[in-house]
Image (tube, rainbow, N blue to C red; front, side, top):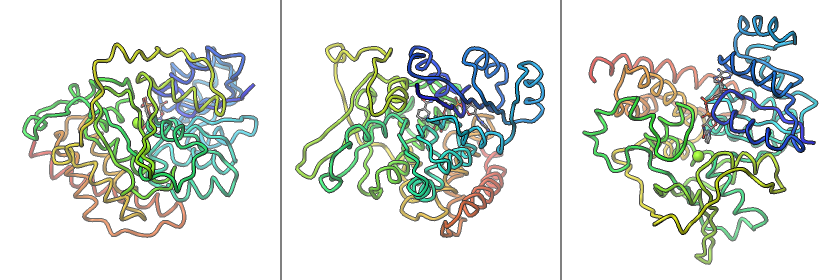
Length: 385
Ligand code: NAD
Ligand code: MG
């Protein structure tokens, strides 16, 4: 029986993971859960899955939940990190969204856990520290992001020297093919309608701007140890080929399935085994065509900014990520327009003096600085659109 902790159990990934687990109660037991503010849902999850340790972001919510459930409820970043390192769990699914996932992920890493990593932002902002600490504390990181799960599955057991490059596929999001002028008019409601994937709000906006793919380039760099010039992106609107590797001999290996996050989640949970899963079968005879195109980085420059941040290294990826989180929030609140998201990120990056990252405090400082700077530029932008 694998004993599982889920950080961010009320989110899109967290709920899909519980669905996978509920079908295989013979193999998996939930021992830890954490949530941000969806207290009603975590209460329900606790009643169904009976974990041993839980935490929520806010102390007042924890108090109320304690009374309702009659069990200890930890709170705040420290409570969530305590759940992440709980000594009676074997596997931690890191599925909190954004920078808030960094410290809990590090806590699981430093406790030497097997980690199913969905929270890509922790690798983007502090990839060197997370990967070095994983080696130091004996933690194993198994990617859950569908592209990285695909690469992980393709790369297994193969010599790194045989690989020429990684190709990440991107759906292109809901606005693939639109012009900049058209993009200036899109609303958050339009942007939240993703054609292939059903995901949380932040990553759905990131998919539309191509920032999600940019973050994934940096994530792949840290996970697989290739520099970003060996990581390419192709737009593949059908989202069937989840990613591929090209070998030196010009041969490719790819991983295919229907677009359903329960696939990569189940693979991470059961790794190195493969279990029967409950996702739809892929019937290639029903799919008319699989197409691949170069991304349009003129209309969607966030991808380029991520490559730049990756090349620059140090604190710059943390600045890219923080400015993006602030800009996405402002877009969702209709303070800025769609095309202002990349503009704010670029503005923030241009004002940053990169520092080396030797400890996590440098990342936290850069994150705070970039949030403040991005908010300043939003005040300048918001009157304009
Ligand atoms: P979501 O918004 O649906 O859920 C986020 C979870 O994090 C929720 O449980 C929420 O309560 C919790 N949370 C948010 N802020 C918090 C805070 N400050 N403190 C503690 N908990 C907090 O997000 P999601 O779509 O499930 O994405 C989660 C992560 O997985 C992201 O990093 C995303 O990039 C990655 N990911 C998601 C998908 C997907 O299909 N949804 C695919 C690939 C990767
Ligand atoms: Mg992905």
